[in-house]
Length: 486
Image (cartoon, rainbow, N blue to C red):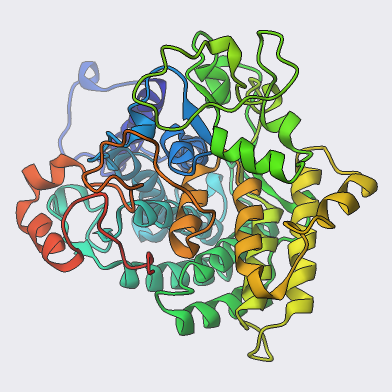
């Protein structure tokens, strides 16, 4: 409910600013004038409100259930995949609409000069384009073909067509690259609670996101993926934790971590048994950060079985909840970590996505090991001895014959609680090896490959809805989207 209220506030801002910015042609009595509205759009407020939706991309419980990072403790429908049609409406009417309005206000000659308090026109547009791409990337990864080129037009088009995912990816690459080059050295953006208006950081974010996006095409369109991968890498990406992109929550109710809020009065989620079993198999030093020991006095960490139909025989205090340091009121959300980028670079080298056009196992191994180190540092468990012991284990040590599998498992670990990204990578690589629980709701009994469209599309946009089904396939969770190749 809090998330919905927050999103509606952002949408209300966008609507209010749109209406106010158009001006009036008739004279009304002072009694009909709202003294709290201004004729000048306040784009810094739009930006702040929109950026507050960034954590929703990384902290979804449903995404973490798909990736089997967590399991349901009491109500198990999520882990059994009862959710078929999932709404993306809040993304469109919330942050995406706000970023679109920022672009329009800074582009339209009638308003461009009135919004300079929010930063130079070019800088505001660049930030909005990058974040608009960030959210569209997230949405298309979950649903596949989505409204894109005809979306965000409000009353000008209430029934937008669905664009093909391949076309969306192509345009997102263009948007990120152009936006990174658009910063003009003028006044920094105001209201930026994510990267503090730092243009250099925004460019790194765009490049790093483009790198991850490029690898997503390793099977769907490897030629395009490789070209974009190399271009993004050459433009500069992050490789250290000092540069990791994270959203910082505050020790206050209005800006607190969603995981903190979820554990205030309920204990519905615990670390998943499949995930914890793998961590234990490699003696992973991140376990004490990822999980707490059960409160029943058990000295060991205990994972919650995944996807059960009934958990009545398992006491809450007998399983390990998510680690306390990851669910404090001001715990950060890792939007795009150095570890994720390093594992992306490692797989790219293994695929031969380099100047030599051939697998470079030496470079891949170095990026892989650096990714493990960065993840341990991120979670505060790194020391040289522990690290050396860890990477020497047969299951962890880099080996060319199954490099992609090992990279994928370590990426799965590093992306803990960033469930949708872990699920995205699982669909692409088929690693880690995941199985549904014993009582899935899906018709084929398998883990979802996509999410079904909101029923509003069927009810209000039927012609375009039927067209996308004819093109992409049935609106079912087992329909594979373009990037999800075997």
